[in-house]
Image (cartoon, rainbow, N blue to C red):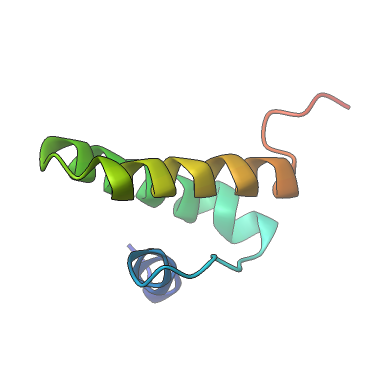
Length: 69
């Protein structure tokens, strides 16, 4: 995990939106956020899990993840 990815997850933990480039998001940040959401689910922290998944959804739309041109 790169320093940028660690900072992104830390921003989410502190309740802030994540700002990153499309390249960073698609290469590492998205996977890290999903792993973070899974860890939250394992620890019965459903509130943080939902926030993490909502952020993945927001960034997917922002960066066009899965969009067909």
